[in-house]
Image 1 (cartoon, rainbow over the protein chains, first blue to last red):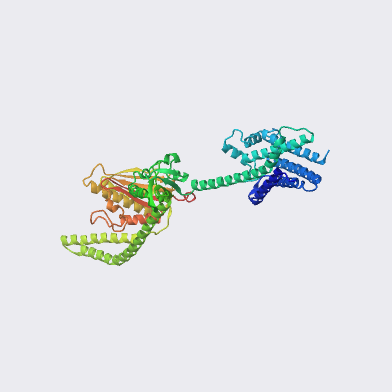
Image 2: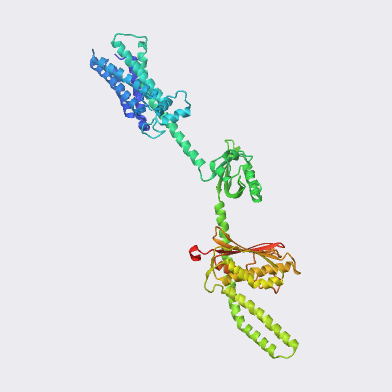
Length: 91
Length: 506
C-alpha cells in the first residue's frame, strides 16, 4: 500500500534532487558539498525504499530504509563538522 | 531488538552529534575567542546585515571569500534541517520504547519537510552566491569609477556637480564633499579664457548637447590652474527630458606644457638657423670688405701724412677715423661668425667680472656712473673661454652705461649700475646679474634684441651685434643669457653659466 505522505515526500525529494542536479555546476563551491549531497541522495533512497516496502520485501526494505536514514544522519553530522570552524587550541 | 532499532539509534546519535557540533562551534566551546565572536556572528544574533555577511564570508573553510561561503540564512536552514532530523529520530526512538508523545501526529509532516530543507539550504546558498557575485560586480564597477585615471562628474542642468569620483576631487584639489554642489563656473572663476569657454559649455549643458574634446583651463582649490580635456554627454529620461550631464575631465596640463616647450624649442631652432645664415653672410661680407678697408685706411693715412693744409688733413683724419670704425664693425662681424676659438679653462667668474670692471672703470668714472658690486667669494668655478665671457660682461656693462647716459644725459646721482654674482639651483649654475636704471628696452623690442643688427640705441651708436654675439658666446658655453626690462625704469641682464664639475675644479 502506498501512503499519501510518503509518495508526496518522494515526489518533493525527487524535485529537490532534480534542482540540485540542474545547479550542480553552481553548487560546486558549496562548502562540504560531498557530504551534504551524499546525505541527501541516501535520504532519497530511504524515502523510495519506504514507498517500495508497501509492495514487496517489507521486512528487508524497512531495514534498508532505517539504514539509509542512519547513513544520511551520519553524513549530515560529518557535513556539520566540515562547514563549521574547527577547534584552535585553548580558548 | 530489531536491526532497524539499532539504525534508528545511530540516526538519533548522529543528529545529537550534529546538535553538539553546532552548539559547541557556535557557542564557542573549545574555540578561540576570535572564532567564538565569529561563529556567534554567523548565527546573526543581534548583528546587522552587513556584519553578518562579513562574518559569514570567513566561514568558507579554505575556499575563496564571498563565492564559497555559507550565509547565516543557509546555516539557519541547516540548523532547522538538523532539528527536524533530530525530532524524527527521537520520535522513532520513543516509539521503539513504546512511548507515545503529543508530537507523534506531526511526524508525517516532518518527513515531508525534511527533504525540502535540503532544497532550501542549496537554494539559499545559490541566492547568497548570486548576491556575492552582484556585490563583486558592483565593487568592481565602483572601483573602476572611483580609481579611473579620468575624472567623472554628473552635472545638473544648473551646472552644479551632483556626483563625482575621487579623481575629480583630486583634479580640483579638494575633497568630494566640497566639490559636490559646486558650479562648473566656480572652477573657472578668474580665468578669462576659462570663463568664456565655461559659459559656452554651460549653454551646452542647459541645451542637453554633447561636447567632445574641449580643452579648458580650470582653477584648483589651492589657486593653481591646470588644463583639462572635457567631454560631456546629456542623460535624458524616457520622455526625453534632460536629467543631468555626464562629464569626463582628463588632465592635459603636462601635454600642454610639452607642446609649449616644443614651440619654444622650434622658435629657438628657427632663431638659431637664422643666426647661422646671418653669420655665414656676415663672415663673407667681412672678409670681402676687410682688405679694401685696410687699403682705404692706409691711403687716407698717407694722404693725411703728406698733404699740406689743415682742412685737408682734418678730412683725411675723418676718413681714417670712419674707416677704423668700419674696421671695428667688420671685426665684430667676424667675431660673430667665428666665436668659439681657443682652449677653455677653469675660471672664477668673480675674477672675470673684476677684470671687466677694471677695463671699463675709466669710462664709467668719466660718465659719473657708480657701480655697486656684490661679488661674493667661494662661488663655483666655471669652464670657459675667459676672454669671451669677459667680452660678454663688458658688452652688457657698456649697454647699461649707454642706457644710463641716455636717461641722464647731464649726469645724475641715479646713474647707478649694480652687478652681482650668486650660485643658483643648488650651486649648479653661477649667475651674473647686471642691472641699471636707465631708459630700459621698449616692450616691442625686448623679444628681438638678441637678433643681429637690432639695436635700441640712437643711429650711429650701435651695430646691433653686441647682444647677438654675447648670446652666442653664452650659448656656446652651455649657458643662458636673459634680459628683463621695464621701459623707463630698469634693465636686468642675467648670465647663467654652468658650474664646472667638482673634480674639474679641484
